[in-house]
Length: 216
Image (cartoon, rainbow, N blue to C red; front, top):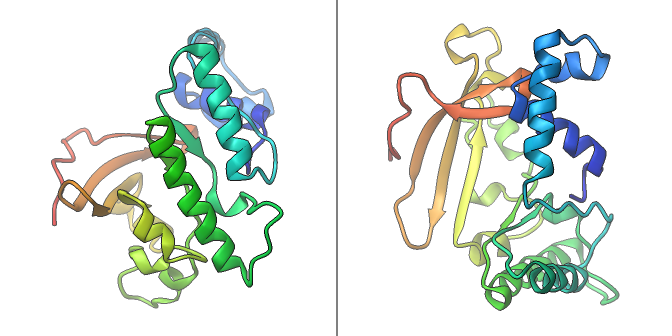
């Protein structure tokens, strides 16, 4: 986690697992039932095999070394999550520009996945292009991945989370609705799945009526 501290991430995870309003948690305005849910979520998370490293500006080589040690000490490593790719450092090597540096980081993460034989999920920033599309379709495209075309090339799967309510806050039909948009999938179909987004606990869930499968 190169963006959030361990403490901030734990707070968000607690509220998500407990389904408790994050604002109430931060301000201490919790009911007794909320406290019970938080305690249960804390117990659940304390037993989960999740390891968080919030070292800022980590390089791919540093991440590789830490992941190897974790894999050896625990006997297995199921998943590596990076939040987010553009906050990683290209190390001591000099690059002509930031785009080249991000491209090198992207390639390094792909090599890491192959070397450790684990999936690597890397979050990425987007350019401002979706916001500048006026009143048209703001859904992100592959070309909107910020600072590197290599991300699109290196990734086996590229997925975007889109909430139209951000652009149309006065439309009640869009409240709490999110779309998981699969723009690229090397070994499968692309499409869109609608989900429910619970703002108070920063949680995504299946829609009550069923989001259905991917739609082209």
